[in-house]
Length: 298
Image 1 (cartoon, rainbow, N blue to C red):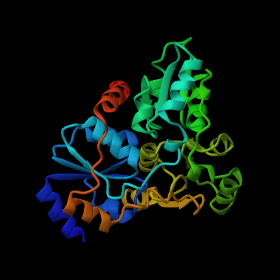
Image 2 (cartoon, rainbow, N blue to C red; image 1 turned 90 degrees about the horizontal axis):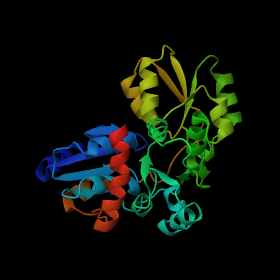
Image 3 (tube, helix red, strand yellow; image 1 turned 180 degrees about the vertical axis):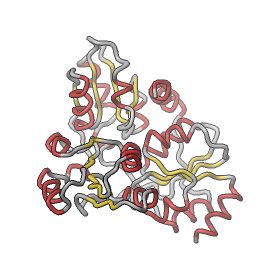
């Protein structure tokens, strides 16, 4: 299967991008693996006719927005993001009407139509840096993730108007799970994703994007590290740090949508050139302004 994917990739002049949460065997056949920020940057740099995005739909949409002249495919178009679906463009327009003059900021985990209504886009890896560019005194609307927004607003020391969206996978994590993991592995640092609820973030040692987790793992002297995010990242952490031990804080941290990409449907979409992701030009042009504003900062 891997050999067939490699052959098809060459025939199609394709590049495969995979998120850190996808299946290990999918990460292994990808040309680039990363978090949302890393893959957003990579999508603007690839020399290929076709981009196959292994992840969830909003990520493939972002790649299509950044590469209007390339063909972007997704192995399973039903791989959605519940958080992204928690706000629509119409709902955001209604919120903006109630807060005239506010800066509208969206987490990259949002649909193209939501990005098109925003001034800035952020990822968990660059949110603090990007948000710091907004002048003091400006009102800020942050959608759709209340937890990432709360995390950054606390770091900045200013209030945001937060949309009540959340990641169902990260919402499963509790402080008790962290306490139990610490008891089983005394002295091991705990890193969690900033999409986690506030009490979970406060119970951890580090609040990091998945890219940040990979850097922390490389640089830390700890031999055992407890990981509070989707379990797919364990594959990359163990592959890059074979001398260290990584333990999931909870085996319940599985995103079913991230697991929808398989070697089989990856092969099929390359073979058939199926499941192309297309964003309407007007929406794409407006969404790109918010993404480009982010990339210019980070």
